[in-house]
Length: 174
Image (cartoon, rainbow, N blue to C red; front, side, top):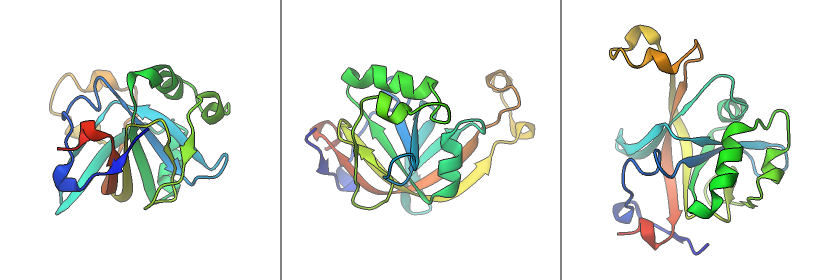
């Protein structure tokens, strides 16, 4: 994949597409075998908070990736071309706790420039993030009646990560 570093003032992305139709692959840990895990995420946001470009991701407590994102200070978010959809579906439905899904998915972990966590050679966009904040969702604060139907007591933890670097194809550059 031909990715280049993208200065933040040149980074563009349809704001909902990365979460809804494309999905992201969230990876946490360090780039050594069995020391990282990935999962697809379709809930999140990209924005500017506290004077920094941030990625916001949601992780349920039972997800194996949760122990990695809690233990390590960094994570990556990768977007992929449609060709990788089957790998993303597998990574979103199979647990790394019970299998070596990182080998089975066929994606190639790569070393990143700003964080110890890997990205993937096949990605068209890689966001390198450092955790800055987390909070557990509190159902007492839900204001919309439609929210509780998304849960069975397994409320997400929300992580804010400062985006340290963005590397992507021309599609992501203005």
